[in-house]
Length: 370
Image 1 (cartoon, rainbow, N blue to C red):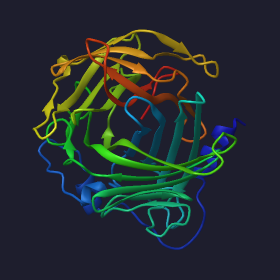
Image 2 (tube, rainbow, N blue to C red):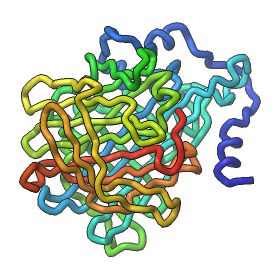
Image 3 (cartoon, rainbow, N blue to C red):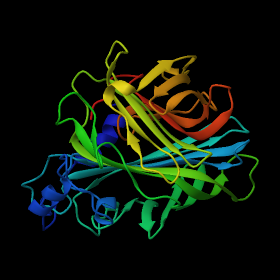
């Protein structure tokens, strides 16, 4: 049996015990995605257990803007299985939790990554993992991410590296789309609730096994948090997406994404731009264009990824360029997908670096299904 499938089946296998945690009516109301629903904090930093899909993303870099040293990604996913709703076991697999973590070492030209998966009944004190509802706190074994006032904190003890993050808010929460209601397709139902925390002041403590780092190093930089949840995010014709979240050096924040059909054409697009100290402008579906440039072919999966892009939005036209080609994540042992997620630079019309952030590309090694 394929090892990834074996892990998936083990995660779904129910055990026996005594009490159930069914999805409650209050959870359904709190998780419902609808235009006009006002996001409420800190409640909406927490988990929305009735939503089918949810994730918390932390990406960033440390070093100087002229020479960033490391990029980092920490992601926690929650997926409602739709199984075991009538099973009285407190260990029944009503929810699955996944986590991905990666560090890009630019000097050594190495990309370190690891993944985790566990089933979860919804019990708040579950041993393997849990996601709190009242505020952001999600954990999977020795991996965790939580919010503490104006800070986001995370600790990852992975195979090959250890990463501790302190991310301090410097700007208000950025509500994506229409006040946090973000369309992802031509049908109104294809939407999520989505907000970002850009321009976070990052402090990272990092230790890499088998590298020139003999002890943990600490460095400062910039980070970005995304939190998104929904039931129906991808249209049936969408195979994947290209997404960027960029902290510009002038304090602005740029989000842009396109969802692609199988032939590479754009099915839907969106994003936003928020200048420092000013309101954000949300982009309409027809206002965002991603034009692929140079490509890199993965020697592991043979997937071909555009690692340079021309990105056009109402806020401007830029070139986006990966700082290292090999930033693919093979997560078939957890979420079952392969995708590219990596530290990239944003260049203006004169070729000057004006921002740093992350580019994510899905659906190149096979159609994505959510």
